[in-house]
Length: 452
Ligand code: ATP
Ligand code: MG
Image 1: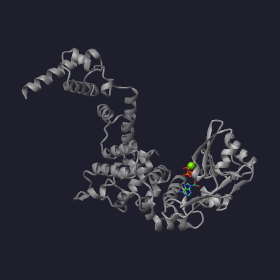
Image 2: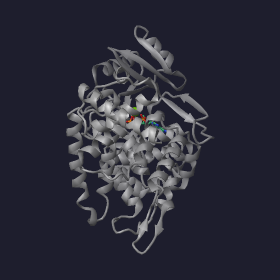
Image 3: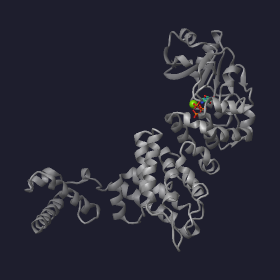
Image 4: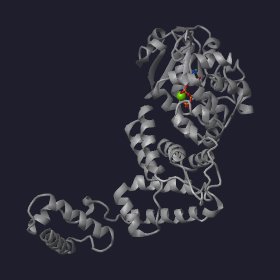
């Protein structure tokens, strides 16, 4: 195995600990990523020195006691924040979530034995090379996810590891080894003991992995242990000639087909989640009237339960709710959508629609091309910086008051009507033109109110 590149500040941290008579190693994600041929970004260091000793050794540096009780302190070296964690062993786990006791250990091997999967349990020392008691390097070469030590015990101790195994299988595109897989299924119900925040963090990473679709197809019952709402999608035959795949496979493909951003992947996972509940059958085939709205409501409830941040919850809900919007290659339609959704959400609606329409039957094979054209036209429209909101309109409430309109809610209605006319290309966004158009709008509104 090739030597690892270690950035200067990290090297200084390790050297200083070693020169003070302690052992220090890189461990976890950075070692795994190096062996995989990727360039690590986060360098986690583990050491035989206790937090107190680390503080003493680095007394001339800024040291922050980030998680001192659990052995972690942050040392700032040359402007870089570096985490150092003391070797530790964890015992007890009577709640299936947290260790009852965390003890500092003097041997690296003890620290590696508490880690979740073999590819995450490799250490590296610039002096002593790779330390790999669980053959994590071999598992990286064979592309395998395998529990460290006694398989079932590891997942009983901390049920989150079940989801982590799936997450790494998705992100690294590694197969889950048979014994590990059997333990995941046997113990999956333990996930109910894990906090929503920890689950949601892993779930987002899982969904953004390059093999997310495969995991959804292969292990829906494990994902279903945290989102049972997806379970009715398993083997659900859509009975509709526009659909070549069953609902779960369609969903898995839609997930893979959107960019790996949590809100897009979650929207893809949940976009059709209520189709089984909305299913009706007639001589033409299966229908799913109202499934977009119902799936949007379910998506919102799922994300609230998982304590998703507000941004993600609102974006996902809006995307699922509107995923059935029939996109038109028409400037007026696109401008109306940009006004209604804002450019970021409308771009996301297009991305979801493109992926959704790419996972249908041959009858729909022309749809992706059409949606790409709509996407191109949308970008052209956005680049031309058109008037899309009241802010962009070259007339405001004061101008209308100067025209004789009295302050009040009518001003809002007149401005909204003028914006509609500008978006639809009926009126130029130019002050004098808008003043004339405003006079017409006011006249029409007055006539209307006199008639009623
Ligand atoms: P990422 O690139 O996502 O940060 P990572 O491997 O660094 O990947 P983290 O979640 O940051 O993953 O965890 C750091 C290391 O701590 C892991 O590599 C693993 O050795 C260990 N670890 C983290 N969570 C657990 C857990 N629940 N049980 C056992 N070991 C864990
Ligand atoms: Mg990490």
